[in-house]
Length: 298
Image (cartoon, rainbow, N blue to C red):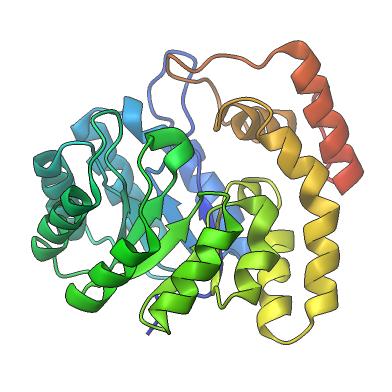
């Protein structure tokens, strides 16, 4: 059975100006997401600035989200690393803290061959009992999961059940789904390619856009899955300028800025992230307004 269908939010980690995690605000954002039809919470992913959290913070944030969500929707914890042993440690500890599933990014910087990826993901998966979503984002990691590799893992490792595809290469996604023949669940990792991914058999999206437009992102997916392709297509096309603005600087700089503009006080960034360039910030504000999002700060 699928971990979820619909729109899962790759949620930000709100912080105080001194960089400490703002748990009260995280709780508010989680409640906002659930109240607006988000279908899953992805905690401590790229958008959650997981790479700048200490291991203790990382696990504390996961535990807080699990407790706050209280099984209302699945909580999927990002526990990937470029070090296999670190990924195993974070994954085991996240499972102990109640995560429903794990998101495993490809090893970054040192990267890996396809043989190395199989060994890495297999070792992590065998250390836990909960389902795993592979996360393919070569633009950030420099490492691409080839379709054949993803299919091999899904067929040979029982708890590797899905992939978040953020390669941006829709032809590669099509090849993956052709080879998979139903053995792996697909989630779009590109907010601008949700409908194309759904048309290839995808079940949803793991979304940055959902941070600021959760209901619309949910509706885009569920309209398609319920057979209303035209409504889904219209939402997708309407969202494209906003998606472009949300990625005009490195994620999560724009989306965290957007939450602040909405008056939701997601707070500061940890270095090396920094404030948006003013021209890009104004572009973001305009895109938010055009999409119908209320801006409390301009």
